[in-house]
Length: 390
Ligand SMILES: Cc1ncc(COP(=O)(O)O)c(C=O)c1O
Image 1: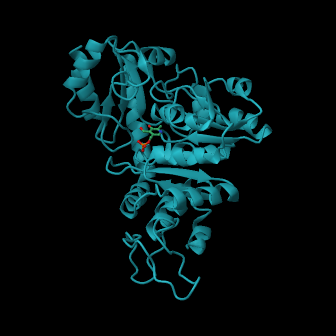
Image 2: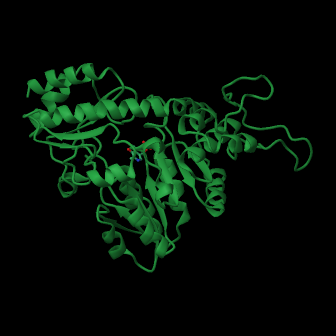
Image 3: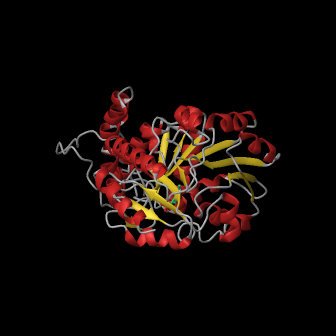
């Protein structure tokens, strides 16, 4: 219920909105932080009369503050948070009915096709996976029943980009929704709605929360129908984000801009060093001038972020490097303040099998790094000593 606050900050800069939108000082106490409202129910004044909240599955003031804040940052009209990124994508597909068709990027987070193929397809919804680095592949896959296109850009872990504007134009011409998973870039570096996307999705677990301590997901909308739909899904299915985790994301987002700037600065330096290191045969990072989509990256994003993949040559080399790091932590996930390093073939992309990995270029020697915001000299020194052992 912060309409005045949202209007007041609507034309302010990104960091100002990140810190203030949806978060006026508490009217009762003056607290500058939105409290964690641990109340499952709310007193009502008379039949049908209440102060905006009735029952916490439907809405909660801490969650509402986060939803208003994320909508403001992505340039959407509403946002709806869920218990994880996968819960948000599960809510997204409730837009569909039996017989509908979805086009999905072929190189998205592995959990997305797992949900689509092993659960949603059982309800008679068809999925086609295409390489969306060429927008024409989306056009070619359209059928009369296509209702949704779901893409991720840049992709995990090959760091390929999709031209959001080109895909959005195709979707618009056929009245199809375009959902962009913006987890890797955050709204600080990329705002898909400005390029024509009709829905933006995030795993807030990553950069938005930023501290590797809470799980969450969000759908940012652009129409009243989507708002009504996803509010209804929150109420019906109950997979909502808890007040405490909503508060964690609110706190994380306050420093999103400074964190992203540091992630980006450290990411560029690590990518440049990796590219200069003879033992590393290839580096996948959109901020390197030899990335095949460097021009698109520079046009579509205002920074390049801190996700980098690189080729060590073999499983043995990857393992030697991964067990030798000390500042970098070997582990899944990304987007936290600490540098996380992982092995896609045996971790995030194990489930898609050898052929699946080969089809998108993931080798046994590929390593992915989510460069954190530690001192970059320490990250570089750690990588140098680990690479020297290969
Ligand atoms: C790009 C992307 N989308 C979605 C997800 C799923 O999010 P969650 O783990 O919060 O369910 C992930 C998780 O790694 C991801 O990297």
